Amino acid sequence: MHSRRSVLRAGSALALAGIAIGGTSNAVAGVAHDRTDRWDGLRRKLQGDVVIPADPNYALAKQGQFAEFDAINPRAIAFCETPQDVRHSVLFARERGIGVRTRSGGHNYRGWSTGEGLVIDLSRINHAVVGPSTVRVGPGLQGIDGLAALAPHNRQLVAGTCPTVCYGGFLSGGGIGYQTRKFGLGSDRMTSAVVVLADGRIVRASPTREPDLFWALRGGGGGNFGVVVDFEVRPIEAPRMVLFTTTWSWDRIRSVFAAWQAWCVNGSNNQGSAFIVMLEDAAPGAVPLVIITGGYHGPEEELDTELLELVGLAGTQPTSRSATDLPFHDAMKAAYGCGELTTEQCHREGQNPMGALHRTGFLREGYRLFDRPFSDTELDRLVSAWDADRRSGQRRFLHCMSLGGASSEMDPTATAFVHRDARFIVGFTTQLDDPTPADEDAAAALAVVDRGTAVLDPISVGAYVNFPGTNLPNWSSAYYGENYPRLVRVKRHYDPDNFFRHPRSVGAPS
Image (cartoon, rainbow, N blue to C red; front, side, top):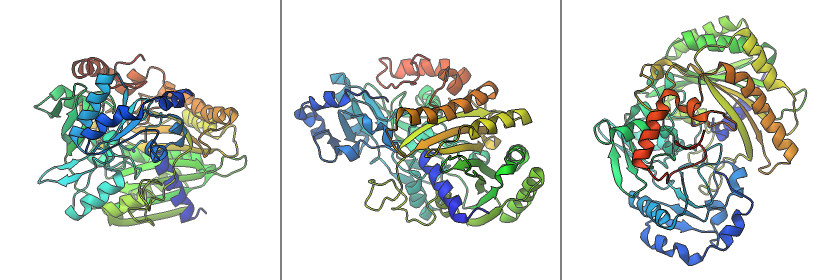
């Protein structure tokens, strides 16, 4: 039987993986020749700070969640504290032909929140302001801090599954989590947004003002249309949540996975859950940990009945089970793997003196969306692909989440998030502690993901822009489907010079 501590370790590892670009080897040389005084003009205009390679805190300032992208050396990082700071940064870069990347939490799996030009960092625009019917949040507000800030007001928001993911990226890409089936996507609850555009204008987008931009911001992905400096969202009515975790025997993986999918499709919308298979070390002979966990937005007695149904579908008993009815903020804190930590500790190392969460060294992932449960044959292929070619020193996950419910009630074209028919998201993830692994180790990590996506691609209905995928052919169709042409029109209207861009930004070659 798996211990409760091993399950908590699994939750923490998934949270750090984000489970809610590009540099070249000559970047350092380019940075070294950048004049220190080049950035003085921007420094004088900002309420915040500008950090350049000559500054002693540069190494920390450029860090995101994934240490492999430390190899990228921005010319500067602007820590903006106000919308005007963002405006000055945009105009400064535009006038000098300097590329920009926008960073809220630094969790982009492909490293698109950093680059070799100017990084516009939003971590200090992290307000949470409670109004009569809406909540205003800054793009740099981390999930863990949002819980703490809103709890005294008896307000909460749809949240992801990682404590240090910020609302800037989470909401822009759609926003899925344990609340999706009950309350819909995070972006579905957005009522307005304040945006700094590529020409320096600051506009408010809503259903009646800049409606096309407002449409695009709800699921169109970050780093495309401008820099959002304020989101206004409707809170959720979730005073409590029952956090539950069950573990299951590895030799029953196929029947348990099939049971979980049927349970999700036919179960109450109060249930939001994840199916997780993990190996902390994918050495030959190691026994994977199989977990079904999540949050239930109803009475614990109802969950008990639902879990009995799951057991019946699986035809086997779990090896362990726990369920705890908690205030929502405490339940989510525990779901983040931070139940035994203070709020200050539940931050990445270096973000504050108490931050205790480790960064991820090297990660490769491939997630796809599905509108139906897998057949027995598809499930066999899935498990076989995940379990093949075990390798010591490699951390390996199969991570699946239930969708549908309230998120399926909107028309696919009502917002930029097109995948309203999706019932599951399923992904292969491999991690290495070394951010610069040997070529053989890096190739082996990618091989796990490529093997998995070869199984997933033929039966998927698309992909989720917030889980971008290491290799993803035809990404524009996979992310956006029929909504992509309209997104391109919005991009051309609000950013005609393609100032905001990354390798898969709207309008880029697919």
